[in-house]
Image 1 (cartoon, rainbow, N blue to C red):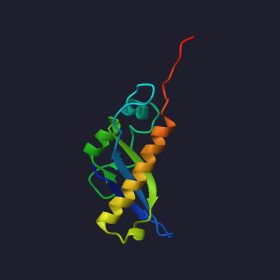
Image 2: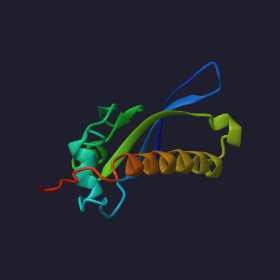
Image 3: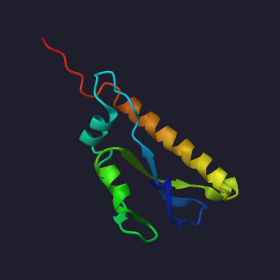
Image 4: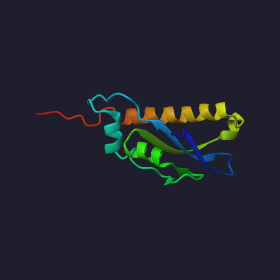
Length: 118
């Protein structure tokens, strides 16, 4: 699985990127697996990238992981120049963006699926 697909640079110094990360393990407060929740809510299961082996594309194996709900995808702007463009710096920026995204998803869907009988 690719961590980052850089698509284009913007005039403001950011890079439009597609990031990938594993779906969080565990369950929400209602007892549903995060994979089930994120598939049911459309937060995973599809990619904004076209399938292929070229630049700006996603491989068949990566797409299969996303469709199965094993990987989340985040399309965002990353200021790669702010870290000097080093591999370690890019990984740190991307990891921070993905953690914020996962945390936001978990907060948003913490009680998703909760029901209560009369």
